[in-house]
Amino acid sequence: MEPVIKLEDFSKTYRNGSMEVKAVRGVTVEIQPGEFVAIMGSSGSGKSTMMNTIGCLDRPTGGRYLLDGVDVGKLNRDQLADLRNQKLGFVFQGFNLLSRTTAVENVELPMLYARPPIPSRVQYKRAMEALELVGLGARHDHHPNQLSGGQQQRVAIARALVNHPKVLLADEPTGNLDTRTSIEVMGVFQSLNEKGITIVMVTHELDIASYCKRKIVMRDGLVRSDEPVGKRLIAPEEIAKLEAEQKSIHLH
Image (cartoon, rainbow, N blue to C red):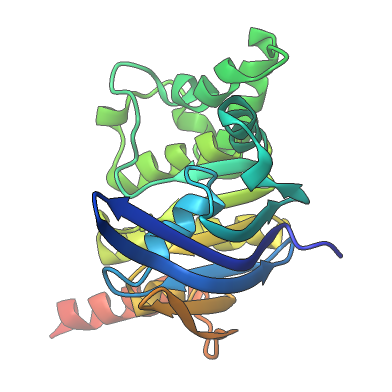
């Protein structure tokens, strides 16, 4: 099977006047279809640079990056934007929803840029299917301010899924959420991954990384470890534990 993401001796250097910052220094990583990978590391480790490159927002200075077999370094700006829209879905820490539009309209947004254009009837159908997938079909006509933080993040996940991407990229997706809501969102990711969706997630939280299947740790622009997650957490089990803890607190 061809890897969906393939970084070969990838390096990225930023130049600021005469200053050179080596953000990533010769990293080789492969991610297969259907994997659920966490990329971890402290600030300045290179994880954000790696994520930006995987997300086609930046190009390698050295080495190669292949997304679904396409050499990203050889594409011009328009081709890069098309590839990003076709192959990738993005979920951010800050939801990035439009406040004056409903959940279903927010989910339809990525399809407005599709080439060839998608008929509005099909856009609506696909947006509703994506909302159903994250358990929010019944709230499709709600505006973001009528939804909880966890529900807003689900809308953002549905929006990322609506173009049927090869890879879902999540950047600190639980950063703005409380413990229980974070677990619920990781449950959404786990169920999507069980359906075969490839997920790559940047997080600095060890417990959140434990919901993934594989963990890549970066430091000083290099991969320091790349291994399967040992004691993997399963979201429904963790929510049950949390509820049991809360009950015992109330009993005392």
